[in-house]
Length: 164
Ligand SMILES: Cc1cc2nc3c(=O)[nH]c(=O)nc-3n(C[C@H](O)[C@H](O)[C@H](O)COP(=O)(O)O)c2cc1C
Image (cartoon, rainbow, N blue to C red):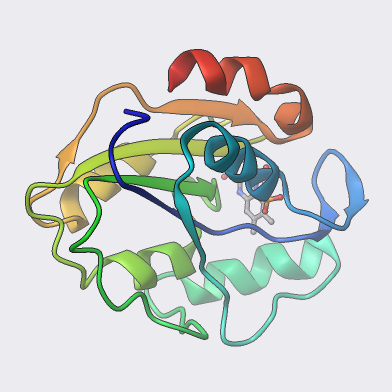
């Protein structure tokens, strides 16, 4: 995998987090940077058009409202140059963050290898793999997706290394 031209598409949110309090960098971003360091992949961070609240309880409700309608700051224009796409997201309400869906749903994944990592606090991969299989047209979604507990993100480098 390391020799293939790769792109990491990820969503991650700092501020108040479920198990780790207020943080400057989201759990998924920590893991995404490990993937980048180990593969040399390019990175695209999906950013919500309107930032989520800093406090966890409000964010939870906002995320629920955004399911199926989650505008983002910048679209991904073209993934044609990449062979492998890493899709990474926290689990929100049982699947990827709603903004992640907005970012990937109109891309042409024909012939692309897709590899998936979630971060979570108990749900594992939840429906993320199935939902990605449904919306990534033409993708070869590998069945080796992994789930990292958000509170363990910092300690996950060796897991990621073995997985890659
Ligand atoms: C809006 C919201 C919804 C969440 N829903 C779930 C969930 O359904 N299952 C779960 O295990 N964790 C859930 N979590 C916890 C996050 O998946 C977990 O803390 C993750 O590591 C956050 O990643 P980030 O710091 O990169 O944003 C939720 C967190 C938020 C903010």
